[in-house]
Length: 319
Image (tube, rainbow, N blue to C red; front, side):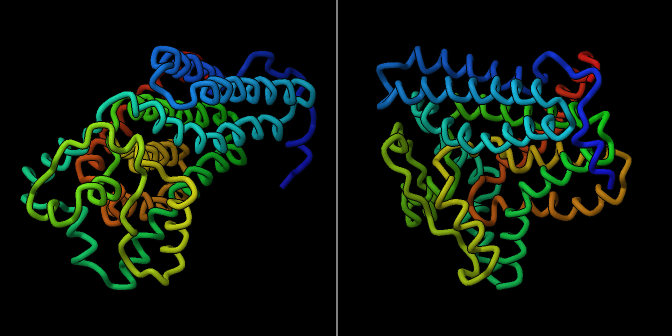
C-alpha cells in the first residue's frame, strides 16, 4: 500500500462542503424546527437546541481541518466523524417522537393478523440452541462492520466513488431518522415488556399513548446468555438502545444499501463475503425482538428505494 498518496496534499482541494455534510446540516435544520414547535413539550429543549449547534459546529470544524490539510486522509476523517455521530442522532429520534403517541399496538395487531401469532416472540422460543442463538447475535453485531467494509473498500479501491458511496449511506441513515422522528414504534423488546407477555400471548395489544416518554425498560434479549456475540449485542443495547426506530428496520435497510453498493463496486468477492451477514440480519432483528417482521419487509423496501433515490441524486450532482 502506498501510504504517501493518502497524506499528500491535493493540488485542487474541494472548497465546498461534501454533499453528505449538507445532508447533516439539512437534518439539523429540519429537527431544529420540530424542537422549536414542540418547545414546551420537551423536558430539556435547551440541551436539544445546543446539541444541534454542536453537530453543526463539528461538521464545519471538520471542513476547516480538511481545508488546512487537504488530503485523502482528512476527507476520510470527515466521513468517519459523521458516521460516529449517528449514535447521537439515533438517540435523538426518541426525544423527538415523544411528541406523538406510540403506535406499537397497530404493528403488533398487524403481525397477529398476518401470522396468527407474534413471530418475534415465537422465533427465539422455537430456536433456543446455542449455535443458532450465537449465529443470530453475530449477524446482528455485523451491522456496523458491513458498513465499514463497504466504505473502506471504496476509499482504498475505488476512491473516485468514495464520496458518492458515503453520501448514499449517510443520506439513507438520515432518511430513516426522519421517519423515526414522526413515527414512534419501539419494537417488541419494549412493547412486549410494557404490556406483559401474558397479554401478548392472549392477543391483547393495548395502545400505550406516551408511556415510552417516561419508560425505557426492555425485555432481556433471548438466546444463550453466556455467548460472546450475545454479550456484544447486550452491551450495545445497554449503552445505546432507546425505545425508538423500529419501523422500518434501518438494520435491514442499510444492509440492503451496502449490498447494492458492494455489487456496484464490481467486487464480487466483497459482495459474496458480506451477503451471508446481510441476509442473516433480516432474521436476527426478529430473533432478538428488536423488530416486527413487518419492520423487516419495510426495511427491504425502503433500502432499495433510498438507494435508488440517493444514487439518482448523486448522479445528478455528478459525484
